[in-house]
Amino acid sequence: MVHEQILSNLSKIIGNEKTSENVFDTFEFAKKAIQNNEIILEINPKINPELDNKMANTILGGMYFRKENGKISFAFGHKYLDTYAENSSIHYTILMHEFKHFNDYFLNKDNFFKSNEKNVFQYELNAINIEVEFIKYYLYGKYNLSKYENYILNSYEKDNLESLTILNKKQSVNIHRFLDNLEKEYKNNKISKEQLINELLIKADQLLEKADIFLDLVDVYNAKEDIFYRFAHFIRLKTFEKYLKYTFNKKFKMDEILFQNSKWVNKHKIIIRTILQHEEANKMYSLALDNYFENEFEK
Image (cartoon, rainbow, N blue to C red; front, side):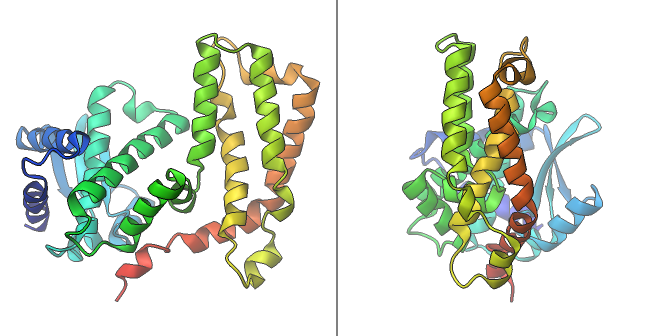
């Protein structure tokens, strides 16, 4: 069967090569789990209408890692399998992405599928980093890489995956890392509550400085130039607001700390108002980006 061919060929690509121990260990762990029936392989399962449609019509979204009735499975979609060819590197890259999810699940079985949105994004970053190493050390120079694989390498080298996560995940890895670092410093008592709030105010001001170039509907309909960088500024502000609530100790709710600070109250109102003012236009542009990589595979 096709999925067995993909697994077999991926095994040949990696072989005993440990240029990236991260990739090698990730693959070996998943391979043994499949052999031991710890992972169930599914072909074109019915999950839910949205995912069924995605798996039937996309390659990048053509696999899904899930837990159903206590069992862990990799689900292979129609288009992913139907478009496979031995020299199609993108199919191996996608599979390695899912294998990393299994590794992360095994390390955190109790909470992996209960993770909050911030941790879910971190798991995605872990899987994207596996893609980078796999492409760089096992595919580059040996295969005709897809547009996605070339893009991810360029993004990794030029902006540490910022452009890739904004385009493909509609989230900013730079803002995620900024807040994550602040969270660790605060929870480890390396910075005070006052220092934390001050850092957040400074970052908010920096992000709002770009608000005058956020997209509006006229820009989306009539753009004659590349407007991705303007969309990126909006995504950074939205990511900042989205993950802010995870920055504090569990014993303190965000509003118990931030909303005792009048400067922050006023700043947060501006942030929310700015996001709402530009939400529709940026959502439209976001939808236009969804097929940026998939269009390459259309015939």
